[in-house]
Length: 180
Image 1 (spheres, rainbow, N blue to C red):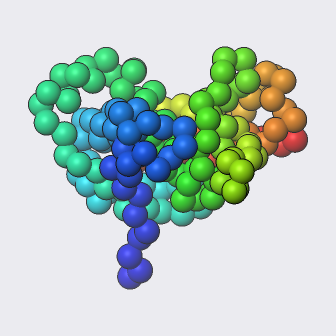
Image 2 (cartoon, one colour):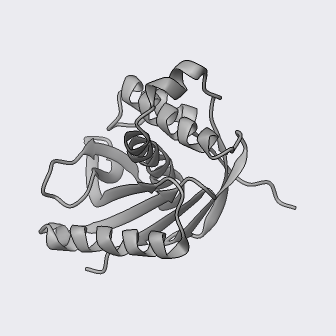
């Protein structure tokens, strides 16, 4: 059996991702870790990625302490931010783009993703993220449709947009690209 490539959530806090300070990256990683642990997962769990990129990863993180569990007691906020952390990791590994800038409201997506060049960064697409704590296949499909529609109605349709919906119960990430 082939060993899975690894997505290490701790890498979000290194400062190597253009759109994330180490503090923001650590917060996203901690939120994802808490959500995964609430679902009974331990570091090394298989994350299935399907859609625009079909793959699997061994998902690793630093186990959280009781204080982190209390800090992220608002489950909807934890799921939202945790999904962002996982989606940023997927964008780098599965899509091949760095997350280069937080987007502004009205674009229809959360982050600009693109390539590093000598002069800085070149935006190539948007990244819209959503999280589901524990959902069915129909919940995931409905959320993907909703987010693709959001990206297309926002005026961002001139940009490719990757929608990533992270479901923590399995865990699974559905990645879909809008049709331009």
